[in-house]
Each structure stands twice: as C-alpha cells, then as structure tokens.
Image (cartoon, rainbow, N blue to C red; front, side, top):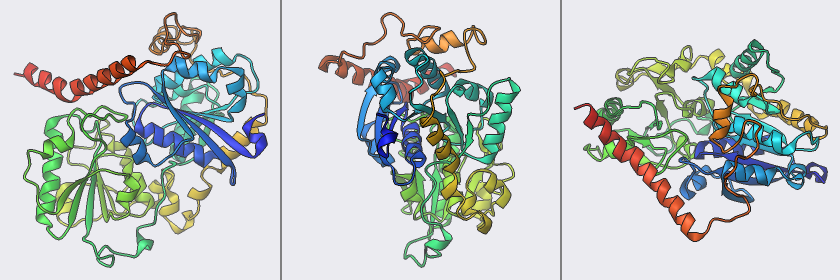
Length: 452
C-alpha cells in the first residue's frame, strides 16, 4: 500500500554533496502535506564530495535511514516493484548529469509501471551559469522546482524554446529560508549585549585563485582593524580535507594561518542559520547565503571589488541594491535592497509588508501537484535527451554512472547485493582522502611550478 494511503509520506532523497543533501532533505519536508507523518530515507551518492559525518550533522536533518550507494546500487534498490510502490516521492538532489543518469536508469527499471514515486529535482541555490545545460539534464522529472518567480519564468522559456514539455516547472522557494527577522529580533546588537557583527560568507570555488582569495581575506582583516568595536567573522564552509558541492583548492583557513589576525576576528563553522541569528551585516561574493540574509532583512552586501562578472556569479545581483565594495563598507555604507528585485527571488516574505506570509505558502502549489500525482497512474519518465535527440552527448553521461544508452547497468557495474567488506571500505576511505589531498595540496603546487 502506498505510504500516502496511511496519512504519511515516504520519501527517498538521493544527494551527492552536503549542500544538495541539505536542499533535498529540507525540500522533502516542505513538500509534505500539513500534519503528514514523513519517513525520510537518505541515499548518499558515493563520490568525491560525499559528505562527512560532521557535514551531515551540521545540516541538522535526521533521516530515518541513511546509506552510501553508487548510482547502480541506488537504481537496483529503487527499481524493485516493492520499492517503486512503497515510496511516494523521490527527490534527486544531484548535479545535472547525475539527475539525467538516474532518470534514464529509473525509466529502464520501472518501465511502464504506473505506480511509482513522484520524481522531483531542482537547484540548491542561485542559477547563474549553464542554465540551458543544467535544465535540459533535469528534464524528465515530474517536478522541476524553481526557487523563485524569476527562475520559473526562465526555466519554462528554455523548455518551450527547445520544444520540451514545460509543465514540470513548479515555482517554490529555497527550502532553508527562515529564522527570526532581523528587525523584529530585538532591534540592534547593542541592545542584545553583543558587538556589531560582520560576517563574510565564503564560497568553495568563487573566486578560484590565490590572489583574489588572499585579497578578500586581507580586506576582511583590514575591516576588523578599522572597526575594533565590531566582531568580524569568516564563515567557512568546510574543514580541510572535506569537500562540498564545489571543489575548494585554497581553503581560507589555510590562508589565514599566514596572517596576523586581530582579536576581534574569528573563523567560524556551523549552520548558516545559527550564524545569521547574530549577524548585523552579511558580506559575500555571490553566495546563496545572501538570499538567506535578505529574507531576514539583515543588511547584505554582494562585493564588487573583483568586478561584476558571470564567472563570479555576482552578476545575478544586478538590480538588487546590494552591490558594494570593501571601501564603501569601511566607510560605513549599509545597502538598501530593492523590494521588487527581492520579491522576484522568492524571499518576498521578508522584503515588503505586502509580501508577508508569502514564503509560508511558497510550496503550496508543489504540494497540490504531488498530491494529485500520487493518486494518479503515472506515465513513464520521458527525459528530453534520448539516443535520438542527443546521440553524441547522452551516452557519455550515462556511461559515467555505469549505464548503457538505454539506461540499463553496464556489465561489471557494482553489485547492490554485495556489501563492501572491511578492506574495501578502508580502501575507499583512503582513495577519497588521497583525492582530496591531491586537490587541495598537490594540484596547487603543480600549477605554481608550471608558472615558473
């Protein structure tokens, strides 16, 4: 019997990094009908960015079960008739190529079976690059979630522009927005008995070179020295040796080891929401943390020091009213976000009085669609990319996940019914550690040697 028939929702989430696990798990909870009993089974796709126990704990989501799998193992687990009928919703929280591979693999495994989970996918944050590529790789899911009105319009335009079905595009919002509004929290930091707090939210891959990252760190330290009455925090994404959604070759904590840091400057980890609870000014290059901050009405700055460029992602914030430089911040500038721009980004509940309450209903349309789909006989998954429409592209994507052109497992693919022994588990951990060491320590050295 489907879980939905028992006034509960059973959801499977497949994720390939800490950020995507956070998005997938929180999205699952947002999509559940009010009062529904949710059972959440987590699957972590084995790879370079598989989250560590610390990263999973930091997200704050506790699944009912959690295990690490390869793509083929996941398909064999979800492809059985029992699994297909017991899950209501499957959230694919993966990079675009991973979503496409799973869609084809599930299509092969499920065939024309009408009773199957509703397949949901989307993006973990701001979509500022590879829009067409990423969207078409996600096409074929029952719901492709757009985190804002602006994204929903862009997504539909891409699908309709290539002649693909756009009815799967469903407007929602980022699932991790929330927390107490800054203005309603008790006014100023002084009233709370703490210093004015400036937080710089780092990103693993932006900027991507030592010179620019050193510059940003130096400016943050300089700001702390210029304002000794302020507390200045460097909010880090991961510890050395851990990987996130994007590769971080030059962790800020390593750069900071070579810097004389003032007493009012600290490096912090932890859940972004908890850090924002005591933030008076959020500064970033283009992190999704800016939207979390804006949602709470916290003064938010997107830096222009390195230019406004697509490669940095800060071009997404053109028109936001949040663009500024460190020189302006050092002089005391506080930004005033544009209400209309903020509203189009799905954070209207915290931007204008007329938008109050809209975030609470942001997932209503998606919930209604899922309820309807759960009760219906669903057609086979039909991705836009097929061996006919993309014969030179699709086979390579599927092969990276050990799948053939028809979505079937290739010979020699990892077996799902054979648990890895102690030796293989040790080898896997050692290989992953060696890869991370190579990315963060060996690769930068080789590049520097090549520039000599």
